[in-house]
Length: 386
Image (cartoon, rainbow, N blue to C red; front, side):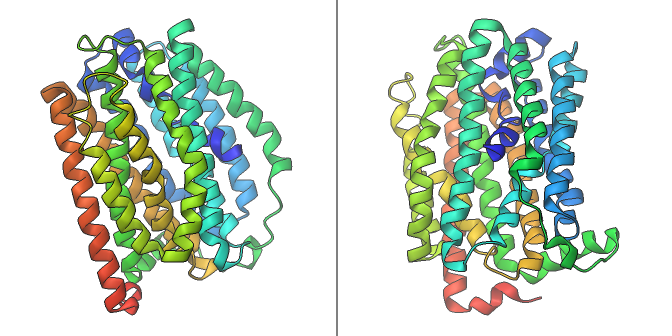
């Protein structure tokens, strides 16, 4: 539940982005700056703050940064202008590292053969948070206005802040880590990334995957609530409920990935996802026909992330948080790119242009996934060479 609530903060904007743009009097392309800066700030925050998880207590870090999330969420609820709202959202992104501390924290406490299952369970928590954010935001905004969404979000994150000290166990492993200075710790992130090329390829794949995810839902919200289809923001929220399927499918697919291997499973999921994306345009005439491609994409998309993490979370415990740092930074750079492209391409070329963009990204994911699997099969040691 903690993972769900702290993750949700970045996704409330997805179904209500059109409403927020109209309220602040900005264009569809301009409103894309809000999620884009949030994602970029997340990447910077993860780069500068997440490595501290290999040095200090993950529990204490989670409590501190979740409290800051609550503060900046309050700022979004109170913002009286587009600039103030964007600033609060950006600062919120910078301190949102708790969802990415917890998987590394958990990976140090499970047997290697259960890594895929546990990682998938945590990913399901992330999916649940995204589901609550998108469905809840759409329904609440339709009835009470978009600002109420952020007041509700503030109440949730404030509650988590109060209960977090008793929900997380004490992290006894932090004191065993080497006490290098902060600059050396940050430098080591780049050194480790250079030594683990397989992780870098996984990060690139997930960056593209997250770009496609972000572009899909931002453009979809604009498309469904625009003059062409004319649905309300609650419809966008209800449609986002499809993500509930992933809560049940992702843990099962994680177990399957444990059996067949992370890289092979990723190739299969990437091909299935490309199939789903190819149906967006021909089935994009109304919300009912869109259900089929959305179901396909939501079933396998999160497993691409799970399998990517599996490629490096089985390595030495003392480097996992820093490898996670590189991976997540690449993921959110992709998310920022998807935010800009999703809204800008829709503004320029409509739903047809968006579908072409998504098809190109998904095709590249398939190609890179196949390359990653073949490189690993030919020489696994190449993934950990400088």
